[in-house]
Image 1 (cartoon, rainbow, N blue to C red):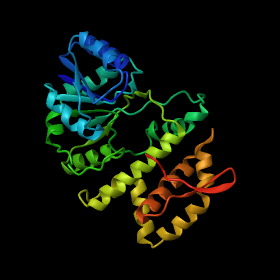
Image 2: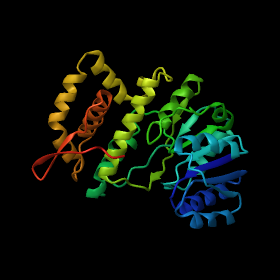
Image 3: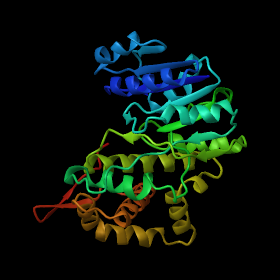
Image 4: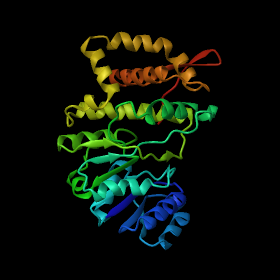
Amino acid sequence: MLSVLIPNYNHDCLELVEDLHRQLVACGSPFELIVAEDGSTLHVAENNRMSRLQGVRHVICRENRGRYRMRYWMPVLAQYPYLLCLDSDAKVVRGDFVEKYLEYARRGTEAVLVGGLAARPGDLSDPEHSLRLAYERQRESRTDIKKGLSCFNYMIRADVMRRLQPDADFPAGYGHEDTVMGLELKRMGVEIRFIDNPLLHSGLDTNEKMLEKSVMAGRNLLALYRGGRYPGLEEESRLLKTYLKLKRWRLAGLFRSGYGLCRNPVRANLLSPDPKMLCFDLFRLGEMAWEDAGKKPARLKKNGREVEKKVEL
């Protein structure tokens, strides 16, 4: 009935696999659980202990394909009609997680089901990871905000997934794999439906790392748009849609200049214990505008003096 697919890179995911395995066995339906190491050099031996569990396969790939290509390659290994695709840095937070997906599978659902992300307790504070926590609470875990496909936690029919073909020219690096997959599914007429069946994201990026990854994601998004292979891409990304409006209204240059004046205080807020989502939106839009214009590295202040700094990714 169900194939659980988890690509992994350098993460200890044994606890996740054991939690899922307990639920899969309790449900009583045929299953397999496959973890594929994507060129991992860490935690491989620890993870290999999962092979002792019935129905679990630990596949060690020496080559690093990257998260985008792994999502398309792993379904080749699966034998059951529904694929439950999860990130390896997830944590199970509810006892009926697997059963809820199986209920839909037994009814023969044609839709892609996105289970969502669980929010951490509202009183949890961590200055080093404050931006990640704020984004989870105010954006990712909210169910009243329309979002596209999230590859963190979803179930899809195997025959539908195998009809999708990876883009050989997909840009390297982090960002927008799920945006492109969601767009392709919509072109095929496949419904993407959100259900209340979340997992917790156990890995937390530091504030600095999250800013770096946001810049890279914006760069990938621009590259995808410029490539012209994904008509309607702007409808899948509010960020891109907003920036294209600025260009259409001939305001992109003025916005870049204004952003340059406030970039330092914007970054300071995002690195603070109380980051604002408005500042995060401004940061992502501003960095995209600079990237599109091919601007020189931004000027940052250090000890009261201006210095040149590249955004290293």
